[in-house]
Image (cartoon, rainbow, N blue to C red; front, side, top):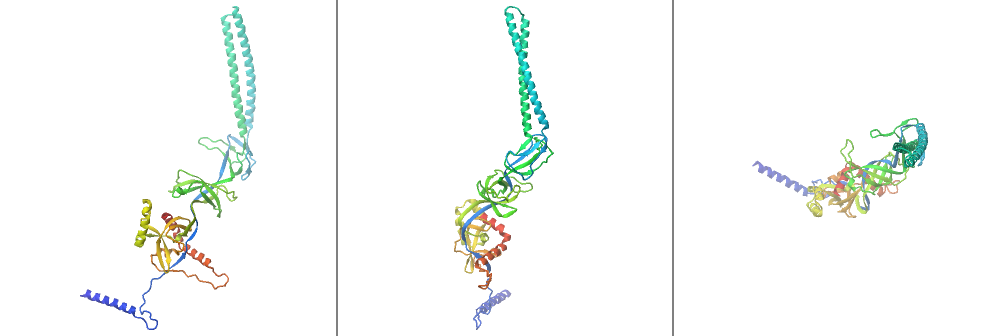
Length: 464
């Protein structure tokens, strides 16, 4: 009985509210009871534009000379003279340093004397050989008349063999002595170290008076200095494994120096490593990529740190919208007709792409009067500001671009209103123009969405 009474009371209250809602005041005919309308979301909009768009892969890198030579000694010796300093410009063949050569000069003189001695020994051995040959000939003549014995003949033949062997031994000693002299002369030449290339002394690691040593298998030798050819520079970068499939040889690139990040330097990709590496203490795999600098800009120097942008894709004339206008919505939060339209368009996609779009759908919101209309889009390449639209947006559409909090709350059919921009009196100095107002609005939108810019760009790239 109590339940029935409660139901009757509720029905009565509802009927009373409905009746009061239809009652209007006599003067302005407005309802006596006014139910609050839906509050419009404040948004900013912009039109799509046709313009070129480029996608870049970014990576850190180090500047180095394309040709750099470490100068080391091939001898163990003391630096006796070093006429150059770090930063000096040198030409190929210029003297870099001179090593102590006293011992080698003595060795060369000794080798020359040894050669002369062996030449005299060879002459003496040849004379002994000539005499032995004459003695053997005389013994043969005597043996024909039985004027000598077989024993004497055998002794003279033995002496002849020894004379020939002695001459051969002296000739081989001469060859050995000449080889030794050649080696000493080459070592003597190595005491004078000259520049192998045109370049600049980029680093000087030894001083006059220091003893330099040669390298061995386990111990590196002394590096005296490094010569760099600054006419041709390169940048060695480390590209993330996610981006490296898009990087190819001969692609255009731009180098931004830490010392002057506002002025890019042109470059191009020369080589991409076929095997990745994992830096110590990090889980990210990177691939070493070499870029040739296409400029003789004096700002770029070996050892500088740089950021590189590699151009991996470009469209010359395409429809683009601000990247912050792209929103990701769950399929269940979209109207059924939108989901059916997307599914029909994805029928020809491969399984992997359909799997990526199984949960979230890329959409934009179009301002149609006072309503926001959701529309699915296919996106292409994107940069840091704009994204290419392959399907879903026309040039006449008014795209809602921000602020981020408003886009996050938008739904199909939600009431929206443009943010009002105060106007300055006409003719007043410094009056704000339409373009200035647009730039200011875009700046406010960017600030509002700065905390999610990285997520937005990643979502756009994933959708494309």
